[in-house]
Length: 344
Image (cartoon, rainbow, N blue to C red; front, side, top):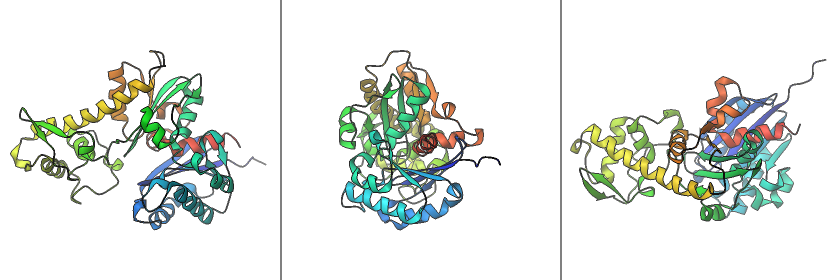
């Protein structure tokens, strides 16, 4: 009788998105991202689990990592981890593994006692997989909200910090992402017709608007509503960008608005470059940058600036061709699925 195929579902439970992958015989065959505004309540996660059910249906094993414990619906990280573990136990009665960083995969009960290891450990899962597949690398994962920058040396994750607080100090966590970052989070002013104009300190626009105007945003990666709740078009993004500098869309030409948008994207890249220069210090010059996440366009630019070869996470993981791009965008979910599957 033919041996039953091993199917592993990987989950990355974030505060803004749920990311789910399906690995079959050690290859990612499906991957999906669902907007999950966890700050509105746990019901958003329940809805996302229901929507993604076809991806994990029939899985022999479910593997989880999380950052959603940071959502302000929870009074603390420990409480967030406990609540998310309860959700997992309730919805998934089968075999479940929780990624706990240096402690590896553990069961739900043990995970509850290792809250500090479980909380926001998704970067460690992806970096661990890259260490197995690529050896030495500067691993950079830019998602919608944050960017992880991790040195990998001698096939091991060579992180300095582990907690969010520690990684913010070390430069391994930069709180800027490809779509959800507020524009005043990357700059306090912008050049407009030769004059540096202070920004209005309001959430009038996001970095997604800048990247949309530049033509480098894949619309499927922008899952949440725009700042004004209006259309996600170039005209809509220009109108939102204009408010940031106290103007209307008609005040500048489209090429001029592109220059303003380019400024914000450049300022974001400079923040990432500064941090990456610190993290990459011990690595040899020929070590590549392995890039993952929805912001790989920005990571490619980083690699060019640092004069390092760029390798897409999608190129090195075992995956069906149709699933590679999305599997890279949801790298932590892909990582826990593949890492857990390798233990079967």
